[in-house]
Length: 257
Length: 263
Image (tube, chains in turn red, orange):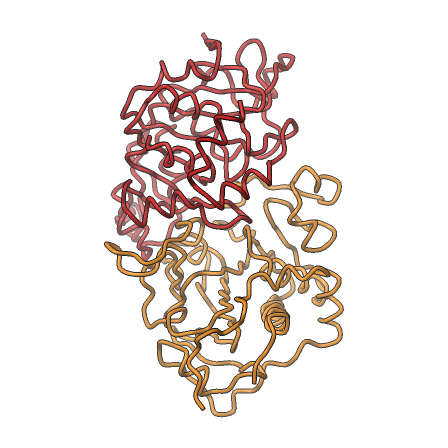
């Protein structure tokens, strides 16, 4: 059964401190900001955050002091450049940053979704990303003997995703690139999806089936300031302001509700 | 001799575009207008089928600005769209053949650093992270780097952090050449048998400036020619694809600040 939560703030009851939380969306696209706000407001800390391609999601969680470990293939504000809170946190080493490449992170999540201990990936063995990421290692591929990078399955407790629409059964519809979200929903023990509006049920067309979803919650504007096609565009002014000062982030999100 | 940001951007774009060959499918990442302009110029100047995949959209009609638009606005302008995860599969199976990458550092083996400057325990600068740079040099037939601020720190003997290794990977069943060249604001350097060789020197530079500002030994033929100036065709294509000169944004202002100059 897919539960419907009363508000994004209720997400805090489902996320224990210290959990590994995967954040959906890519870059400035479909970041579940309302759900993240619920977690921060609920005082949930010490989280291991997985954000494939991070932006304001990672910035907000870092600025709020909610992060212990951060797993990502990259954090930036796209055209607005480097992410200030991410940069400061790495410079001061206030969080442990585990750097991934895109292919290796996709593979680690895929292994988790398939219930496999590890999977080979197409990342080059010579990369320092491989050398320093404890989940990656170079092994001789058993059938061929060729040195190959293997990614250990990335265990995820909670996946948080924002989508334009969900139906009454809890099927989720996405217009455009799904990014890693389909895999995250399958890999996570608990998947929570916030959505802009309710849509008529059309289960075969769902981007993520209700079978992978534990709870949905209505949250119009819940991706602000990132985009959620076709309901919301990126708020360029807000992202630009964000890029200028990391101290503005929590305040800006507070006002946005 | 000095050059303006605009002259540097123009010559870097056309030097990159000249390396595109018929049949190439060029992948372009985010926030790299020089790479985007180069791929689009090549589409105009190469007569036979060059394709550009930017932000998942294939062969978007229009120039740099329409590529920087959101995918929603591109719907009527593109014949094909590839989700992000599929674009990675395209790299794996070489349905994409070339990418222009803009790392913080490129070393003598063509290793690329997009991650950090300085030692791991006390870095002096941090960048976005591994992205696909750790993946694509081992997968694509060719990767070409570019750096608009040629100095020993940008082209060191050894990068501070190998995000992407400069050569292919034996496990790839298709041949990947790794980083085959780097185009800078001073010169065009090719990597031949894991050694950097100066192919041409930009008109405002010379061999000693290139040598002084490179952190590793280059094979520098005495007769290295000047990089040919943009042709009328190339200038026309540049105007067509990037009339608002977004390409200039990637060149430092002022260019070549504090560079080692031999006098």
